[in-house]
Length: 442
Image 1 (cartoon, rainbow, N blue to C red):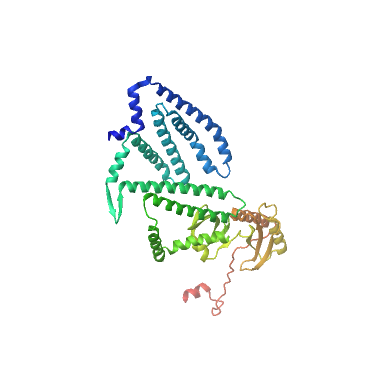
Image 2 (cartoon, rainbow, N blue to C red):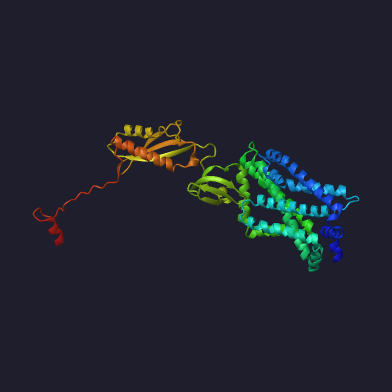
């Protein structure tokens, strides 16, 4: 164990410091090299960071922002590594080697934290997990520089078991988990980077952009798995067993999941429903805000969001109010009394649509006589709007108030249900006999 400890940068530095103390000239020179490297890294990072952020402000912000955050420790680490390589001939570099180990861990921790924050930006649990991830990385660094890490690895490797011809140890399992985690994290980061770039391409249809993004992210995940498994020592032929199990699962219980997944790609490819469309699905009217591989997110007028499986949009009728254009015909029913001058009432109804910013002047508003109801004449005011996403409830309410005031000003009555009651005396009651007495006698 002593030999392992002597091989660490920390032990070499402490041994040299105990032997020569602060009077060692090489220690002072190494401190000057570290100070000069820190100053150079700070100057270059200050110069490069604004240019880097400006160049990636539009499409590549996701990647450029991460490099900008890592710029100072990365440049500091690289400069110290370069100084160590140049200074090592005939000089002591124990402090520089210890510094490179510390700086490389700092770069690794910052990179891991940044990737976790960007890949899982909307996850609350990641905020709690980040301190633990950083703590594990710093713990690994501490074990490395103290020389305890090889001893721990040897102990973990000694605890093993066999599965067929494959020897499985705790160390192998940990290495596998770490390799898969790093590979998948990097793969997801590349997927997010590509998604940001693709979604910024305004010349491509939005649905096509979403399809390309999903396909590329799926392929990246598959490639990441194919890279991670050999790193752990797992043969890729196990994927054939997994594909067979997946086929059985699809046959028994995953039909809906597969159907929704395929339906999502069909919706995006045929362009029948796009993000931002105003649709009516199962008597729910709202705006499509997201199309995922499993469901469509429909934002309703009251602020709630309905999660609708993609299969529903393929197998059921969907009323798309903004497929070819955003024009929407709004109908407002009105009833007037039978003694009303219909031509006058029609002109008043059309006047109520004037000076309304949301109502189009072309096509013009129209009034139709729908029929003769039980209490009055049924009219229908029809007009067109170009912004159905804003809803029609407020507009209907405003027009109803204007119609009420206009009809009241011009003496037009809006009828309400009435019942005329006619009392007919029984024919077999004599005129000299009181009706109440006759009823009581019966």
